Length: 497
Ligand code: HEM
Image 1: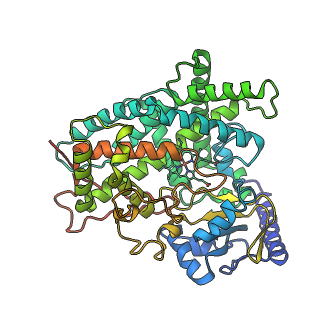
Image 2: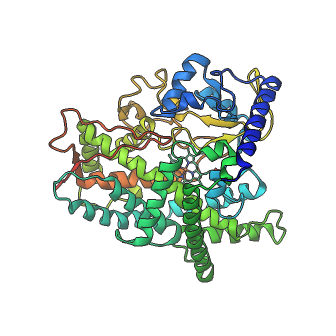
Image 3: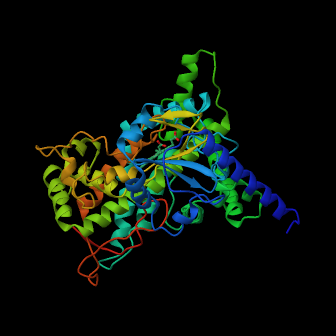
């Protein structure tokens, strides 16, 4: 080890401590547990099963907005709808950056050009606008419907192969969702044994394992200069992703025909052309190839993990609550039948199925703490001043489990999303699986259509049951970490002939 390293580390730790002291003196921050020098509140958070339930408990003591220190990093946690409205909606620009972290750096192609991890800038705004336009066109047209109808066939075949033996549905959902997103984004499909996609999914799972509980180099940036196997692995995986996106981008540019858009990249090229035509050569904001590669990578990555987790909860919860599953079956049988190919036009006739999806996302939001935000400048909030560069975490899980908004919040009750006529009720303010404000999920409209149709297509043909040897109460546990991931579980699928 370099002999100067301990001194360098010591100097950095001392500086962070002094910065912390100065910040505390200068700003009136929301209350919170007393931090330790240098470590902040990390000791309190170490080993807790889920950060969001710990945050909810801290909110009972300190109020709906409290301050924590992740090491030296000042972090404000928002635990109520009011506080999220006051920040993400009313001060959307000031609360609209992302933390500038090593993880963000590692998973961006090039520098600072990602939608999901980039800071607000005219380029970032245009990346969002152009992606939105392309996704909207893609999601409302025939390609998405045809794609889902096609991909569900392979998924059904893979379930049928299990016979009536208990199996883990997560890998099957994973492959289906990855294929949906790969086809949607770049017009590509993978076989279950394709080594490229197997390696890709392995990289993502490894990334979630490593970074799922927070990455120390994000908190103590000095650590990024030390040898780190996880970082090396992520860099290699991002190089592969970058090459894949580059190949896709070049191929699509070469074959682009605005009258024949079959996937997201073609719609993106069409949206780009439209905007350039509107600007009439007067380009105030220019996006280069790396901006587009990041759009592809962000859309693909943000859409896969969240969707597979959500579908896994839907299936698992329905196995756990047979009465709910019976109601989905009844609705689909009556509104569509078992032999009709399900399509987008059936969505308005399947409100209970949609309510099941909403209730699964309420109970187990795929991103219970959203994606961390950061303040752009010193900003007033209630009687406090939040310093520029503060990390801001929305505790979406807390809103979704607020007993004043959701009586018996831990129970799976899809009916709470329906009105007295059995139609889908207007979305309550305290339901925010896609977050809100300036950085709200870009894929929300696609995700809603995709997940609803896939859910309906799965339950049209199958009944899911706990394994015969399961204890009298079949319950699914959560994996410890920062995402609401179910622990692996096995179920039996019965074909509804
Ligand atoms: C169940 C499905 C999904 C859930 C629960 C979900 C949730 C979220 C959340 C909570 C955020 C953070 C927003 C914020 O900071 O305010 C986000 C961001 C994002 N999502 Fe989704 N998402 C889902 C599916 C998708 C899909 C299918 C796509 C793409 C087609 C997508 C693309 C993105 C992108 C690009 C961002 C970054 C936005 C930004 O930083 O400006 N998501 N998502």
